[in-house]
Length: 282
Ligand SMILES: [Zn+2]
Image 1 (cartoon, rainbow, N blue to C red):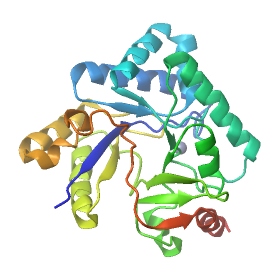
Image 2: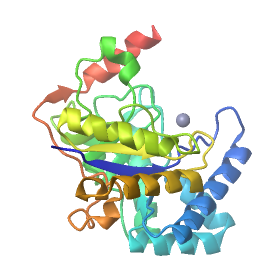
Image 3: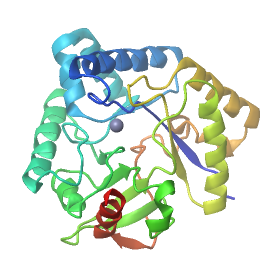
Image 4: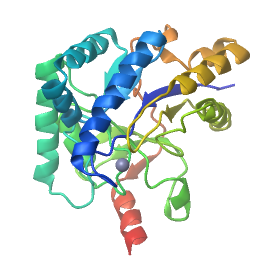
């Protein structure tokens, strides 16, 4: 019986949305500080964050924190995903723009941390164009995490799988994971309730699933209460089936990128995703 959930602690950061970029800037600094503090309190906690721009902001404003992040990356407690400068809209910008997203961001990550992101991470775009697999592969990434079209779009969404192989316009293939509900969780015990639902989902679908938790949009990330609730879920359930909630504790997955995804038989052409989005906007 498959009951395998990988917990992905993250913070969706909108540098501008209902606020200006200056507020987004401080949102990034406080979210990163919080992630580092949670790591000191909880030896199993892993934080995942995309967006080279955010790291640049920390580097220029809080160099000591930047060093701390660098140490956590080496330790494997801080995971860099999304080798793009920022998470963009994926419908309108030109191909050249996407190529430069990868070029500048991966170069930055490599220069500063000696690594490049392996997984594209663009959780909040309302569509994903058909060249993304090709562009990601060309900049060192072979997987992609996204959220929309999601559950609410099922009427126009042609398949049920959360994990699949995505073939782009040129035939490039990447592993793709659709976040089943949303990229964040509320700040309290809801993270554990969400993880429990994901355990059931894993059992029903007979495949491992990733559960994204942590306060998002205006940043924040996993809270003390989130981690406390997840710890007690582990303690109350016990047994091997739950160990993988914290993948760092599991010997078989210890050295894997948490976004190392599984491939199902089905292959879908990305045009479908874009088409769904166009219909939605019409
Ligand atoms: Zn957003």
